[in-house]
Length: 242
Ligand code: PGA
Image (cartoon, rainbow, N blue to C red; front, side, top):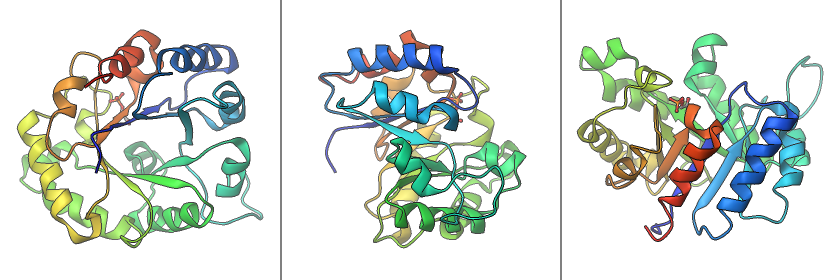
């Protein structure tokens, strides 16, 4: 694996055309010399708009979910083909907010992952334990189960994101030791062999350098700090030459 990192901004349910457009324009400008993989994941409504702004740049577009069917009577859902048609190359799947608020099971995440790959998207598949699971010493078991049940065949092209649920949007980052232990553990599982493993959960411009230096951390999945231009740009700036 190269030293280049994968930096993914998950905009969640934020940004209208204007603010999303401004953010994308600033990222485009700031990242133009970056050799790293930079991906922004806007809400569905502006995927196409942001793809136009980032056309012919070194920044890729991702979406935040997709359905597992190609088309049909699924009111309110979006297929992989629709995302590709709108300019997306990646899709976040199994984010803990989808698992919690939309009752998404690992089985469903796996079905979506297979459909995304078939539809030429690269899934970024999220896993992570709750605080209660960590405190009761079950973090690795929980994460392994989620991985085994959510991931497609190792031979396909996908990215893993480890996001401890208690670290998402809380300002509480996992310690470097905990991140190291979990990323080494994930990397050691045959189903994950050779796959990039991102860390996510309260990553910001003040802690990104330290987290990226941890063994087996291939990149970052960033929520809150990815929609604050100066923070996201600083995270990218810190990468250059690093
Ligand atoms: P956060 O979100 O950076 O705001 O903690 C991360 C995520 O949910 O992907």
